[in-house]
Image (cartoon, rainbow, N blue to C red):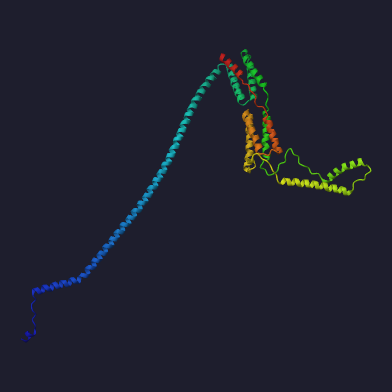
Length: 401
């Protein structure tokens, strides 16, 4: 009894109490695990944010790379288009040059074709001529004479080669004289009349005129210009000569002595003092005259009609001399070709250049001007005859036979 009373007996658990205890236990466990779920959620959200940022950064990097590549691609395409345009322009230029060259070649080919056709026709004519010449020796001789006379007539008309025409006529007459045929008498008479007409022409000293022109050309480098600083002595005014005082004193004393001797033979000679005064006076006069001449040389006043001649530079002066030489050389060529118009025009231009730029007071300039005037006075206007009579005689004989 004692043990049973001392041992307390617990009441049996009821179902409702157990359910309440389970709910409290589950609530206690939920409240205990709640902080761990929030941290995980936050970590998950941070990871998602980082991942999203990485994705955005990757997309931005990819966009930047794509943008850079697109920009480079655009610049490369632009460069290639520019190079393509340049290549097209160069190709157009080359094509244009090729077209022009093709046109030029076509024109040259057409010219060559025409020349070839002309040469072929000339060759056929020459072959026919050779065949005709082979028929008869006299015809060959007459044809040769005709060619020689035609050439001589052209030289006589264009270059005035009288000697060449005379030689051609004399050779033709000599060739005809070898064959003693009366048919050639008319031709020889025509040749004789042409020879007499050429021999009756007045002779023109062409080599002498050419030599004078060469002499004038050689003097150009030594001719002074107006722009030269050194004073040029005039060719007409002689240079004053200085007389020594002793000679002047003797010269002045000699007439005085002779007059005194003629007037008064018994008068004594002049004293030494008067002679010294006379010598000093003469010395002073000569020195003052020389000093005045030197002072006058310090300032020189010249009147020039062409002011540009004074303003020539050394280079321009060189070209003035060279142009004058070219003028005279052209006159020489015109003389040799008997072109009187060009000959006189070149000489007149040379005279104008000398009068405009050179100092005409200098002796060399005056000599050159006189030489050119002498050359300009030469008569080249000679009416030269032709060899038409001899040529017509030869052609008429060939036509009849």
